[in-house]
Length: 166
Image (cartoon, rainbow, N blue to C red; front, side, top):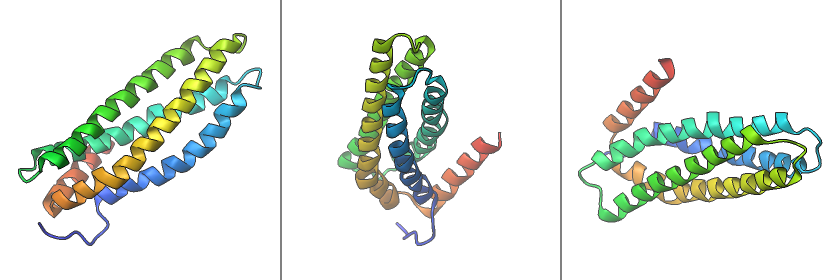
C-alpha cells in the first residue's frame, strides 16, 4: 500500500469534524438559551438546519469512503467492525435528527414541556455526534488512511465532486 503524503480526501472529510465540533459548542449555548426565549423558532430552525444540511451531507461523504473500505480485499475483521460501527452510529444519529425534525414541526413556545423535551433531545444529539466524531477520528479515519490507495482516494474525490456538481 503506497503512502499518502499529500492532503487527501480522507483528511478533508476528517477536518470537517473540527469545524463541526466548534459549531457544536455554539449550538449547545444556543439550545441552552432557548428555554428562556419567548419565540425561539428561528434558533430552532438554525439548529435543525445545521444537522440536516451539514451533518447529513458529511455522512453522505463518509458513506463513499465506507463503500471503498468495505470493498477492500485486505480489510481485517477488526477493521470491518470499526466501519460497521460507524454505519450503525450514523443510523442512530439520523434517526435522532429525524425525531428532532418531527418535534420541530409541532414546536410551540407556549408549551414549556415541549420546549424542555426539545432542548434535552438536542443536547443528547450534540453529545452523541461529538462522541461519534471523536471515535471516527481515533478509529475510522486511521483505518481509511491505512487501507485506501491513491487510486481509491482519487475515485472518492471524483465521486464527491460529481455529487456536488449534479
